[in-house]
Length: 168
Image (tube, rainbow, N blue to C red):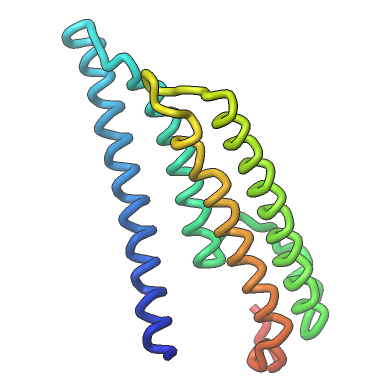
């Protein structure tokens, strides 16, 4: 069974990396097109700037999900310098669970925002329902919350986390 889970993990990583790369390339291409269109022929895509703003949001969320996947998100490990052993693990546990809680709150409120946008029938990009384009927000925050919660639970229950740590 673990081989199946490892395969699914690799597939998820591949998909996230593909999403990040595709979004970045599409953003760069669209931005270049907008610049060349304005300066070269005096006309750009009417919804190009709005689409670029949405793509920045999507790229930011995809990058944050990738960072949480690899546990490489922005952190200030101030306590790691002073704490060792079980105290360091406890600080990491609190940090992971706090991060999971914050991401869960952000997922909840961004879901409320998306549903409000759906209720009021907001549109973006010349008539596209706004909630379709805003849906990555609650999904991204929910995935990050899930990952940090799992990492926190692993600190509680994994036997390897009870082994003495090497100081860095």
